[in-house]
Length: 71
Image (tube, rainbow, N blue to C red; front, side, top):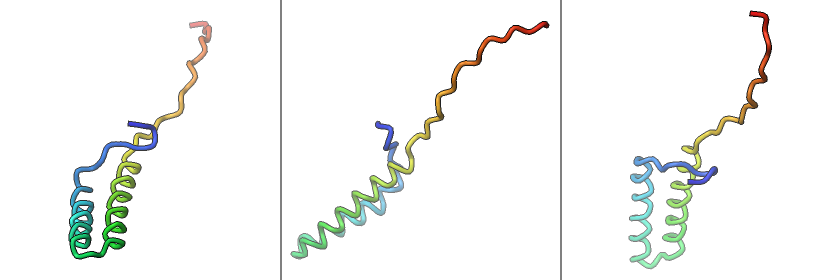
């Protein structure tokens, strides 16, 4: 994966699958523009879910300097 996207939730399959199957039905009925719109919306939903689940990387910490103590 990249720094911008993370793993995809399994639960996003339900709404994205419903949108994709609706797009197939629209495509079979001849509504090409609406089917493309539904497919793009399903893809954006999956991308948004992957973006939300990305890892937040902690900033790199500099190593602590050695301090000489009297103990």
